[in-house]
Image (cartoon, rainbow, N blue to C red; front, top):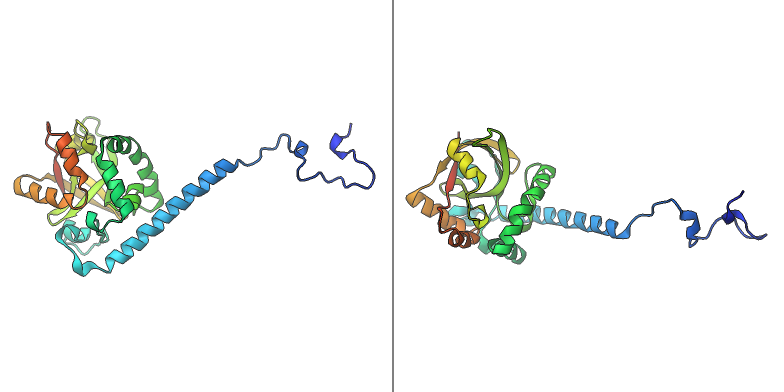
Length: 252
């Protein structure tokens, strides 16, 4: 039996009307909301990537006004001619309004709780897509996020985590604040057992040895770090029962 849609009166076209949904049975039409969410996500990521690249280009032209905690990572980590990390200025004073707001949010208890459980799941794919040059956190906050690979203290399995890598006058430093939580992060125990690690900055990889900073060296790095991420002072108050370890990543 012919379909009812082809039964028509003489003189009318057999082509169904564009508003006749009876011919759309069994055909999955695109979801406008899903397409909108996908387009919005692509727009935000592309915009953040372009903004980060433009911001880096602008800051590279102002190297003559550097302060010690803004030295190029290639100079503070290694004296070799290999430029394994390009310069970026990360100080809180130079961050824009949105970047400052996100840094302040990360210092709060609700913000640090959410970021500690969510952000690293997004940082890893963004890090891969950008060739190791960016993470979502570095694009949105302007912070120097690196990828550190350590060896599990118990399992012996390599563990890679995104974390803030602080370029200081003493070298590239990482701070085991763990978002101000009550316990040390896993990398704290991993580096105590095996201080050898691998770090990726701006797409370049280098083997390093983690050395615990103590006394004046730790105090100096801590003060320089607060100029980049003041939230560490909040973490220190919330973790008064434990010492927040500061590691300097020295090249092997």
